[in-house]
Length: 382
Image (cartoon, rainbow, N blue to C red):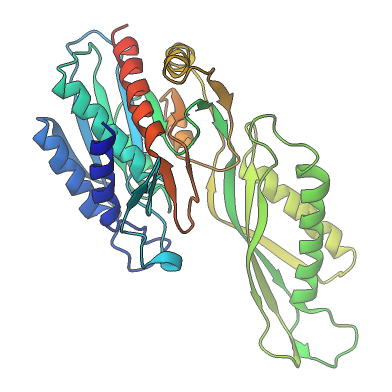
C-alpha cells in the first residue's frame, strides 16, 4: 500500500492548489479535485463536483451501503497555503525513508490520499458495509472555510471524521476558535511639535501593552486542559504618514483565540475594557474593533459510540492507547459539529505545516487507512 500512497500523493502535490484568499492569483482547488474525481470514477464510484457558489468547489463521492447501517462522512481539504519560501521544490514531492516531503504533504493532501486509498480498498476488496460512506474533499479550509460551510448546508448530518495532521494515537475532541480582529485607534492629526498631543499611534501603544499583559496574566496562567493557552498574537500594524506629523489613525490586526464555552464577543469585550482603561490616560482616545473573520471553538458531542470503536482500532493498529486531545489551532471540525455532524478528528503524523519542507509519515498514513477501514467496518454495520 505504501507504494500506492507515494504515487498518489506525489501527483496530488504536483498540482498547485494554493488558496487564492491567502495568495491572490493562485489557482485554487479545481484541478486537483478533478484529478481525485477521475481516480474515484476509475474505481466505479459516483463522484460529483459541487459548486459552492462563491468561486470554490467541493468534491463529493459516495460508497453506497447495502442498507440499514450507520453512515459516516470522511473529510479532507484539497487546498494549501502558498509556497513562496520554497517554490523551487514545494510541488516536487520527495520520499526518503518514512517521510514524504512536499506542499500539503500532511496539510492536507496526505489525508486526501488516505481517503482515496480507503475507497480503493473498500471497492477493490468488495468490502460491503451496511451504512453509506461519504467522501468530502472540500475547498478553502486555509482561507474563509467556504467549502465546509457549503458542504454541511448541502448534506444531511451524520458522524464525521475530520482527517488532519496529528499523531495517529491522538483523537481530537476539541479545539480553539479564533478571530482575526482589526483594532482601529483614531487621533487628532497635527504638527509634530504641538505640546500635549498624543496621536493615534501613542494610543495604540497603550492598547498593545494591555493586550500583552492580558496574554501574560490571563491566557498564560489559565490554559485549557486540552487546548492549551488561548492564542494571541499581533499580526500587522500601520499608521502615520511622516516623522513630522501626529497621525490621526492607527490600525492593528491581531489573531486571538476562544475556548469552548466562549465566543469572539468575549474577546471583543476584553478589548473594549482596555479602551476604557486607556481613555483614563488619554481622555480624547477613540478605539473600535472590527471582526474580519470569527470562527467558534469545537467540542465534540454525540460521538461516544464512534469514539469507542475508533480508539479500539487505533490501539490494535499501533499497540498503544489512543488519547483524547485538543488543539490550540482551529479546524473545520467546528463547522461540522455545529451543523449537527457528531465529529471527531484523526490523522497521520507530519511536520513543518505552513513552512518549507512540510512532511508526512508514510507509515502512519498507511496505518491510518487501516484504522479507518476497520472503524468503518464496525461502525457502519451497527
